[in-house]
Length: 467
Image (cartoon, rainbow, N blue to C red):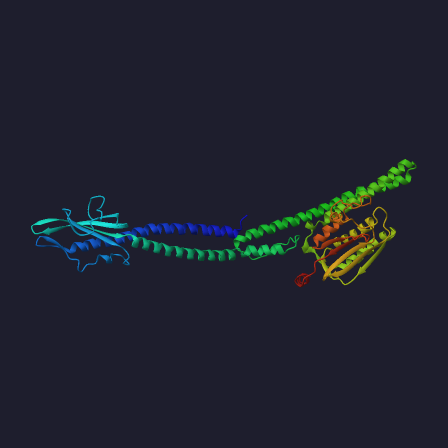
């Protein structure tokens, strides 16, 4: 698809080129006519000058050529001149006998084109009366000039005009390019502003633009507002679904537990316990699905992100998960090194840490329950805040690493879980502009690292001003 600049340049350059060609063709036609008329007038003037040089002496015609030079007819002395003078009896008086007469006898003077001695000629034929003694008659005078001078003059003029048109065209194109560049500057400014934004930044575009671009900006802002409203509606829908689904699943689980305690039939008790287990798994899966829906990166409004201490959020998440981890016979270790603030949603960031810990707790041991240590570490890597969660379990095969963030994918299908934990982690990381990386050397467990973008000085100043 061509750019606006190319289209504007095409619609400026194409008409200019057509006008230039039309101008040159028209100039050639008009100039040829004007030059031919001028040179024809000069030919006729030369013939009339010859007429004044003819006189009669004792009944004989004489031509006085002493003070007449017909070679001066050419504008630059480059043309060849031929002439012929004879009486009405056909007797040659002077000139070139082979010079052809006009093709059509008619009213004098007559202009025509002819050839003589290998030259293309433009000729004029005229006649005038002359009196010899007691007789009178007509004298025919033909003067012809080669057409090199005319053609050369037309060629020089058209060449000069073409050069001027070419220079004018280049100048016009240069001015058009400058005008297009300046005219499209507001669009480029808006484009740069949108490219610099986070994919989730739906704040209105604020820019001083011409009236023609203001409609586009208004449309973009309207679209962003509709997207913000759609995000709010989706979040509200998720909250409603969460409430409507968790309640019946919890009731089924509670009813199964009560029924199990009141039932004496062993077979029926086993069925009730299985119903309770399925209800518990369903409740966990529903909770994870709702968490995944809430953490979708495209639904996160980056304007709502606030500066938070990464280490503090991780400490709170570890404190929340500690009791559950210890009950499962595992250890939880939190290491906080030098760290700083990150722009984040504290709730979603906490979900990220909790799901990383839960993933290690459930899957680090493979087919057997994990009884090792889960290490949560916060540190600086290349001046960027980084979080890592590592275990000493069986690890993950290299072929499975690229698929860990896929929904419902489990490297060990036999282990419990919904297959959504790392998908939630990936969505939260993408919403915060963070980079997610997996490392699993053979026999050394799995390490998940989340590297957050550093806060720039301009970002810090902007956030401080907003606060």
